[in-house]
Length: 192
Image (cartoon, rainbow, N blue to C red; front, top):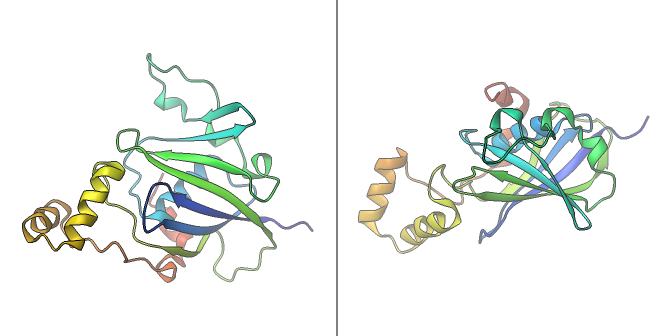
């Protein structure tokens, strides 16, 4: 029996300190289901559009859901619900770009780290490691996130009060624990 679990590292680009996760998913997972896993593992709320782009040499292939079709950008036919990870990743180091929220433009690099046998007692998908909390939704992309981090670092009470009123909580950029995501498969049921 061949290894049936793929291991990926997900990095949110242009963040410092780096925001990243290690996830494990079944190799027959679709790209759309990988999107759902990334949403939960990173801490996003699935409130925006997404796409995947795989670059092979000088050629790029985009995967986007048909309902995102628009007259300005017609659908190209690469539905992420129809493509499985085992058909897209074969070599350690293979990558795909994951773009979440076309306005804030959160770019993630998804890197294939290897395969393993199904040995989990909790099931798959799983998030086994990571660092840093995900930026809040609609914070204004990397630029807006850096402004929030600056306000936290410099203890700008007025700005922090406004962020807390907007978010409904005090944002802690260091608040991440893979232990909170052990039951990732149960959390995925909430995301369509």
